[in-house]
Amino acid sequence: MGSDIEGESRKDARERQQTNADLDRVTDYVGEERELDAEKFRQSMNVILDTKTKDKAKEAREKELAVVVVKEEDIALVASEMEIETKVAERVLREHQGDVVAALRSLIHA
Image (cartoon, rainbow, N blue to C red; front, side, top):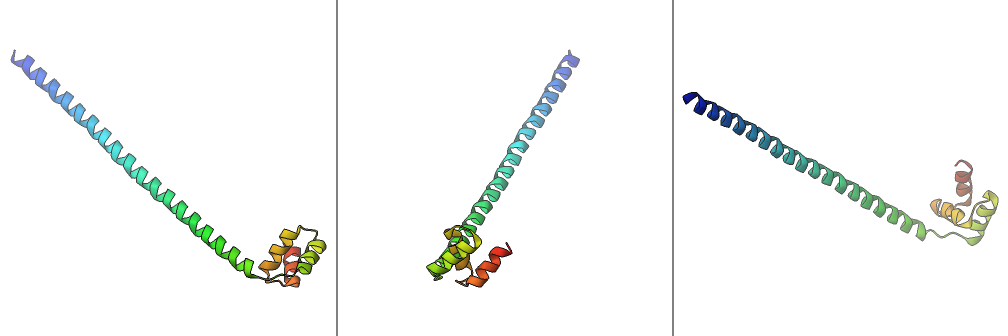
């Protein structure tokens, strides 16, 4: 009888060890998952912040270009000489502060 009780207690001890080991694995997995979620969150926030920064820079650049005065005849000249749309010609002229020669050169070398 003593060996039956001893055998049962060994079996119980092994089951408890196995249960504890299983519980540790589950706990470790949850901890790792939270770490991964936190890293994904950081990466997502960095992407959002980078996008906002780029958008702000783009808006600032558009405001700078909107201030540049270009003549309609310069737009027409660049558009006809380079065979491009007037919107593109206007944009290139604005990027070159209305300088027709610089705008034409940039279009030729592009």
